[in-house]
Image 1: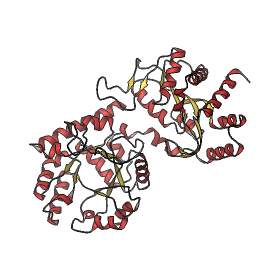
Image 2: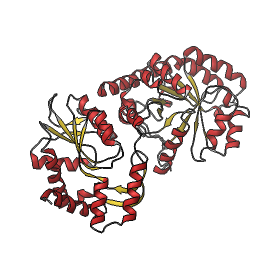
Image 3: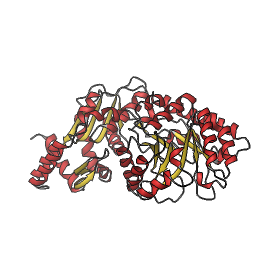
Image 4: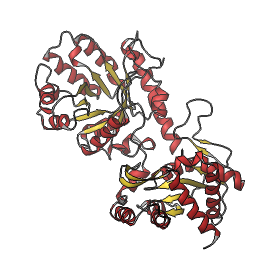
Length: 477
């Protein structure tokens, strides 16, 4: 056994001893359940182990020609890349997950020249999606990326996906190799080895997912995303947004039917959707619906009732299609909480009313101190995938879903004068909400409804939001 192989074995056992390799039931980044989890972020707390890792990686890098720069995939691989850079004297650049909205506003930090070859460094590869996202931004800055060196290949299809996208992957360890080392050292038994081997044999990243991994929705035009949407209202929204060059949704939180109709007429040319709370109208009558629909058709925008359904299925069915509001007959879009599970969506899907309808599922809220947690968010995204023909998009404050371009991200709480109001509503600027938070549609309320001239205000918001969208596209193309 040579010195490199011995060092690799000792390193593997150290990973186990510091609990960087765990056994149990865990979920990977792309949602696959696994009996073995690699928490390699712990290495940063063990300087000697970090030195060993950098030395092992340098042995791999020796066989890769003409490396000008290093870039660690954020965030776990950043300190690893730094350690390798210091030891090899190869300069390093850093990729931001989102560009700053101040200063130089760069996605790639560091000194580099277009045409230089950049080697990617990563900790663990399952699908290769994180590497492909990093490569996309590096190439967008003019750098050449053909190789990646990684600590662990989970052997679930990532290496092949990377190869199909022009990236050669060099791994210190394969998962089966790591299991053999740990078994030989007495860290795990035969049963665990067999369990992991069976898992690897039966759980591969679907090769049809390659497009989904490489196509970040933030890089794509609304026109191209309309073709990927499974929900018909989402398709129509994308088309309206592209045709009218607007991502503006106005929150029509007014108290009278006259105010609502006047506002719809005033802002109609500048919006893709009008968001209502129909139950706050003090003089609601069904005679309102016809004129409201006529305005929406004439100005080509979607009526969007922000009901936030959150009850058992049968109750939601009645709230949606019965009573004095009969929402199912006039609002193509509604909002739904996933608090009560899938029953609310089943109720909306099965109700009578408009043939084409869509739902925005609420995954995050803009109200300060809200009780939504990571579990709720993860479950909401999973339900959205299951009901993709009904779900038009997600209401959220962050880019939670990057690789499902058929969904629309709706972000409330937008004002040019961004602040917090006296009831805990947090606001974002147009640039922030589009460039940092990933919004496709931005909801503006009082910034327009309380303006002295709602027409001028809506024109300004439409212009600023569309310019931010174009900046987002230019950054990645």
